Image (tube, rainbow, N blue to C red):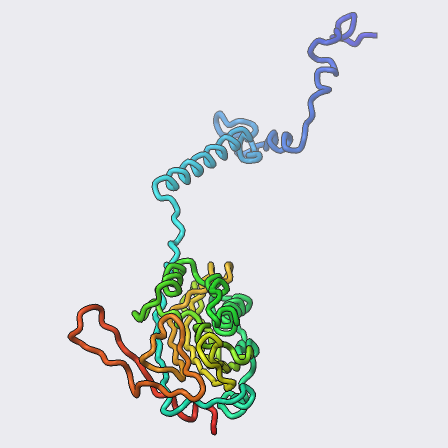
Length: 356
């Protein structure tokens, strides 16, 4: 039976007012919050033209307007970044170029004949009697972190410096002048040209003396009487600024040598040849990653050898029984044309040689 006010046939299907009209409508929580109203108080409603209710702010504005505003902000920020990047592109700090190695070589001339004997006897009677053999004599100090470098980075710097000393002072192939690659592989790329020139065309100019980079002998004159080299010295490390470590080394290397077979009559007697190397290395963060270093300074004292001999390419040890041909440095003429050459020579202390 139709109710009063309804059409005789009931509510037509599909017309407004039917239940189907609202079946697809979902009143979620955000909709309800946005649609809340609040009734004014009685006193507020007494005002002229006062509405009965006030709107209560919902979630802070239309979602579409918020999204539009966010997109606009992002677009402006991105455009600003691109503009600044074009006008003022970021330039990483330029890498500091490596310095040229500064070299000092001082030959040490003996005051008398060079003592001879077997390697065992000579080492036992020399100040090197208690020195360690080979790489065991190059010991690392206690490793501690610094203000800008971790303990691991400090250890890498020290280990790289030790590797350089081992390759340049102990490798038999390097000592006899056969190879240089093991030493070259540990150098900063900016120093390779200076190193190559020092090997190919050594000169007494304080920059291209081969002995500043490595220890090597002329195989046509001397040979190793004992492959074991006695070593004693220290390694120290400190920061050279926020981006680099400085490693200093001070080691004495003692070699047992004899005359080479190609140099005339061969003596069975060996002699000791002592090389003191004081070196300063710089290792920056890039060097740490590539296991290399920069050799900044090298001071070498080596003897017994004649001060008049040319030691720029290879060291010139005096064999057992020989004396130095000069008592002092070579004559220097300040009036002679050409580049000035500072002649350095020292006298080898008798206490530095094997005792009788």
